[in-house]
Amino acid sequence: MDQGGRTGPKPNGDLMSTLTPLDPRPVTTRALAASRRERPPARRGAARRRAMLGAAYAAPTAVMVGVFFLAPLVLVGWMSLHRWPLLGPPTLNAPDNYSRISDNELVRSAAWFTAKYTVLMTVLLFVVAFGLALLVQQRRPAVGFMRTAFLMPMAVGFASASLLFLGLLSDEIGPVSDLLRSLGIIDGYVSWTSGSPESALGSAVVLVLWRFAGFTMLILLTGLQAIPLEVYEAARIDGATRWQTFRRITVPLMRPTIALVLTMMITGSLLAFDQFWILTRGGPDNGTTSLVMVIYREAFIRLDLGSAAAISVVLLAILVIFNVVQLGVLRRRS
Image (cartoon, rainbow, N blue to C red; front, side, top):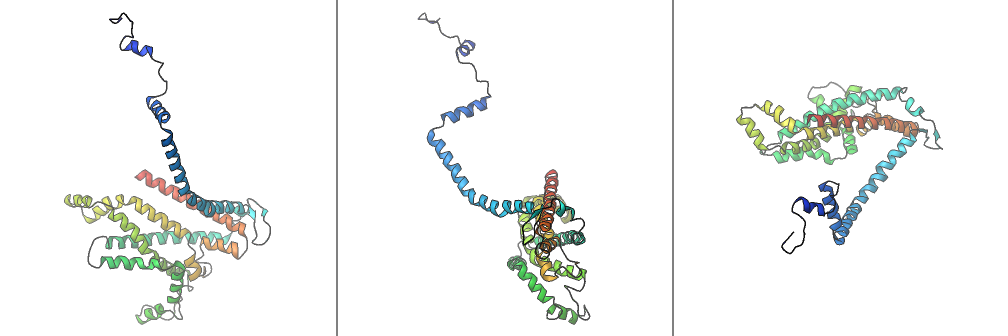
């Protein structure tokens, strides 16, 4: 009781007893709910307008992805379940298109060749590109010229580059055979693109190295330059050799960049088409026929779109599984 004779709430616990019961929700939830209730209508309207503006900016990209990726993907899956001639109505034949893949001798030989080409091309391209990136990493005289020269082949379209190599390697009009004969390296005429599967594969490998080594070098160079110089200086002070620095510092810190480069190279090798279609036509004796070339032949030579779609779905599944496994391994090691 106060001096006026009035009774009032006692401090501490009695005061709390006069209030409304506590909200059973956590304090953070109550605070968020209160802030939302107390937010002025103008702020809520501004937030809604920002959300609508963001959706408007993203809408063109979403439409492009839906029209040019999701819709064709669904159509390919649907086609793979049908006998779908290029001219004529489709008929359902699931799962015959998939069961016939294992019985197709050309598919088996193309799968083996594609796997062999992927391993060979990935190793060679990575080694050459990484060597070029290390060569032009430090500032030195003419390093800018070398970077530009290594990247210049990327300005040539892949189909144009394939036609260029077809002319250079021609045993009739190409200068390569004449140059090698004058140096005494070869004797007589050599058919680089159709003489044997090994020479045809080597021609395609040289073409891809010339075309993509500079671009891959640029990506790896970006990863190299992102490594702080203080890390190298500390390793040098500790007495680390160049090999130890490369193995213990450069490679681990470049793991995300290396993963990106390997994913691009392996995906591009599994989907190889232009270099073999223009240079070798899949020959000799289907020795350089890739999986994408088999898909092309099934669709536009045998006019069986359903079979081509089934092979495409299987190839897509292989690519997805590979990328998921690779990213999982990278995440665990990181």
